[in-house]
Length: 100
Image (cartoon, rainbow, N blue to C red; front, side, top):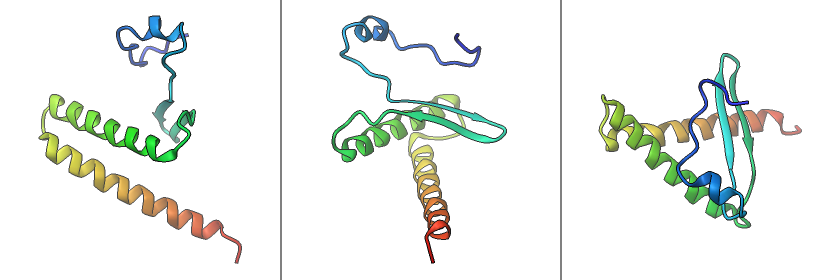
């Protein structure tokens, strides 16, 4: 079932998906309780996924620029700052869970 807030599938994906040449990597939703994330590690080398995440940031920066209020550079800078903050929060949470 398609949710009314779901993004449309990119053109040509449905056709390519039938022959196995494309694979969905992630679905991400944000709600009152925070993010809900499903992911599929589809690259043998995690570095390749990191490169994909960098490309995703570029696309988000472009989307923010298109919506107005940010240049691509400003949006990318803010995304990178959020990335660093999110990693710091994650590392702090991981340190608290570590056995003493």
